[in-house]
Length: 86
Image (tube, rainbow, N blue to C red; front, side):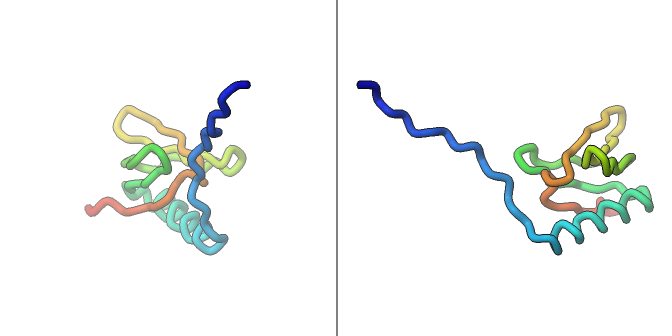
Protein backbone atom coordinates (compact mmCIF):
# COMPACT_ATOMS: atom_id res chain seq x y z
CA UNK A 1 0.00 0.00 0.00
CA UNK A 2 1.45 3.34 -1.10
CA UNK A 3 1.76 6.44 1.02
CA UNK A 4 -0.71 9.15 0.07
CA UNK A 5 0.97 12.47 -0.50
CA UNK A 6 -1.07 15.62 0.07
CA UNK A 7 -2.12 17.28 -3.15
CA UNK A 8 -0.18 20.41 -3.92
CA UNK A 9 -2.71 23.16 -4.34
CA UNK A 10 -1.96 25.92 -6.81
CA UNK A 11 -1.90 29.35 -5.19
CA UNK A 12 -5.21 31.01 -5.87
CA UNK A 13 -5.37 34.44 -7.47
CA UNK A 14 -7.04 36.89 -5.08
CA UNK A 15 -10.69 37.39 -5.97
CA UNK A 16 -12.08 40.85 -6.46
CA UNK A 17 -15.66 41.97 -6.87
CA UNK A 18 -17.07 43.63 -9.98
CA UNK A 19 -16.66 47.11 -8.52
CA UNK A 20 -12.94 46.61 -7.81
CA UNK A 21 -12.34 45.24 -11.34
CA UNK A 22 -14.26 48.14 -12.89
CA UNK A 23 -12.21 50.70 -10.93
CA UNK A 24 -9.00 48.94 -11.94
CA UNK A 25 -10.10 48.99 -15.59
CA UNK A 26 -10.93 52.71 -15.47
CA UNK A 27 -7.55 53.51 -13.94
CA UNK A 28 -5.74 51.50 -16.63
CA UNK A 29 -7.69 53.18 -19.46
CA UNK A 30 -6.98 56.62 -17.98
CA UNK A 31 -3.24 55.89 -17.67
CA UNK A 32 -3.23 54.55 -21.25
CA UNK A 33 -5.00 57.61 -22.71
CA UNK A 34 -2.86 60.10 -20.80
CA UNK A 35 0.32 58.10 -21.50
CA UNK A 36 1.22 58.18 -17.81
CA UNK A 37 3.88 55.92 -16.42
CA UNK A 38 2.47 53.47 -13.90
CA UNK A 39 3.59 50.88 -11.40
CA UNK A 40 1.49 47.73 -11.61
CA UNK A 41 1.46 45.26 -8.76
CA UNK A 42 1.09 41.90 -10.48
CA UNK A 43 0.05 38.64 -8.82
CA UNK A 44 3.05 36.29 -8.39
CA UNK A 45 5.38 38.65 -10.32
CA UNK A 46 5.79 41.67 -8.09
CA UNK A 47 5.91 45.15 -9.60
CA UNK A 48 6.12 46.20 -13.23
CA UNK A 49 6.80 49.82 -14.12
CA UNK A 50 6.28 51.45 -17.50
CA UNK A 51 3.78 52.96 -19.92
CA UNK A 52 0.70 51.11 -21.06
CA UNK A 53 1.01 50.88 -24.85
CA UNK A 54 -1.96 48.61 -25.59
CA UNK A 55 -5.11 47.39 -23.90
CA UNK A 56 -6.09 44.21 -25.72
CA UNK A 57 -9.74 43.46 -25.03
CA UNK A 58 -9.69 40.23 -26.99
CA UNK A 59 -6.82 38.56 -25.15
CA UNK A 60 -7.42 40.57 -21.95
CA UNK A 61 -3.72 41.45 -21.88
CA UNK A 62 -2.25 44.79 -20.86
CA UNK A 63 0.91 45.62 -22.84
CA UNK A 64 3.42 47.64 -20.79
CA UNK A 65 6.60 49.10 -22.25
CA UNK A 66 9.58 49.93 -20.09
CA UNK A 67 12.55 51.17 -22.09
CA UNK A 68 13.29 48.39 -24.59
CA UNK A 69 11.15 45.70 -23.02
CA UNK A 70 7.45 44.98 -23.63
CA UNK A 71 5.59 42.96 -21.04
CA UNK A 72 2.13 41.45 -21.53
CA UNK A 73 0.18 41.14 -18.30
CA UNK A 74 -3.19 39.38 -17.94
CA UNK A 75 -5.76 41.91 -16.68
CA UNK A 76 -6.93 39.63 -13.87
CA UNK A 77 -3.35 39.31 -12.55
CA UNK A 78 -3.12 43.06 -11.89
CA UNK A 79 -3.74 43.72 -8.22
CA UNK A 80 -2.98 47.43 -8.03
CA UNK A 81 -2.22 50.41 -10.30
CA UNK A 82 -0.21 53.40 -9.10
CA UNK A 83 0.87 56.50 -10.98
CA UNK A 84 4.57 57.25 -11.03
CA UNK A 85 5.16 60.72 -9.57
CA UNK A 86 6.26 63.16 -12.29
